[in-house]
Length: 256
Ligand SMILES: Nc1nc2c(c(=O)[nH]1)N[C@H]1C(S)=C(S)[C@@H](COP(=O)(O)O)O[C@H]1N2
Ligand SMILES: [Mo]
Image (cartoon, rainbow, N blue to C red; front, side, top):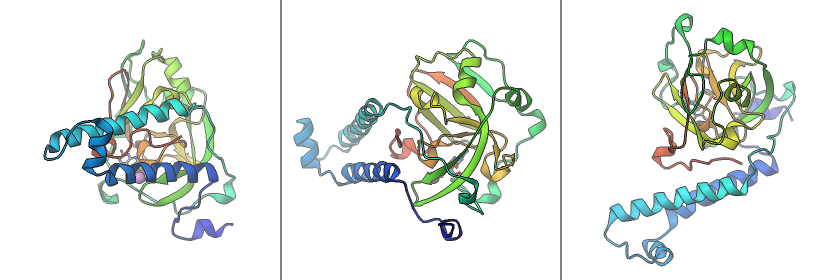
């Protein structure tokens, strides 16, 4: 039981999460393993020798995959939650750079910028975010690199925040820009999911630098890379915003 916390994080997933991961792996295999012949048969185009067309076709197929998944999943199913005895300690740090390069943000002048399809575009201070209703969940973060860990995150449900700023919740995407040039985006149903948080706290304390201070997105129904840390801007849009890893071939939907 608790040895799950002591071992270096090995994947130990709930059945629903297993299916989720297997599906994601199967999809990447499919994407990587499809021969040009198979793609030609599927699309009715002769693709041999035209790398640009092959690339465009594979990307189109991946985007099609995202649309089918978004349609298949309601976006409102709850992720498993755990009790405090299951918390992973120490919690892994992960970013596209080493730990000593974690951005050095001046918290005293920090505010979250808001743009796009929203009524109120004033920036938000941390104090004002803390005045909104808060929620805390203990959930599992799953990284595509093959580890997972259980942590406690607290903050404002993204849904509450979107309602407060008069966001157009019929828009397709909510995008995030980070202090370290990382970026990501969520489909609107996931943004409105009750467990999706604008997280201010990790465990019992304000988010430490490694884990995304002063503000990160915590979305337990998605893979780790869709949980941007150090966010400085939130925007609502109908134009596909992509993401740092998503634009390098990781499946955009990446979750349930
Ligand atoms: N700003 C920013 N957010 C990020 C990343 C990053 O490199 N920069 N990495 C992502 C990845 S791949 C994972 S698995 C999680 C790791 O979160 P943790 O460091 O709290 O474990 O953060 C995600 N959010
Ligand atoms: Mo990750």
